[in-house]
Image (cartoon, rainbow, N blue to C red; front, side):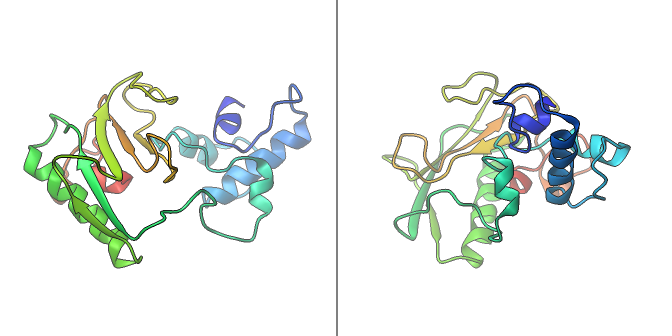
Length: 190
């Protein structure tokens, strides 16, 4: 129940949900996860729920599953030429590898959008990228190894809009040389 509530599939503001609401929430999750829709907590569902993931909710409310649009409904950038700054890097990889992976990830976004991304090393940037553990200055503390991998924020006008935070308690690798299935290449998350 906590998972379904945390990620937006179940609204618990009115107290404990009845079995019908639980079934519907499980169905919403299963559809979103592209697994067999059964409405029950079967093995396939539990495996998916226990898979490390981004901390951000998949939707604001169960009503979002009824929408026809298949894109994020948060804010958008007010410009197309964006800058990013890497505040710190994971010690799991050499700094130049982290920089390359992040640049390649932004190139993938640029290739399918009208956005451009330029690395800056000083001054302000539109997107700040950092690796941190536990509580790290926003409203989403990381949970340690094996849970949340990262989170990012919609491009608001506030201080953390557009930023991406990676959980340093996770183990990160370079996908081009990945052998350890317990490690996560940052490009899969970004």
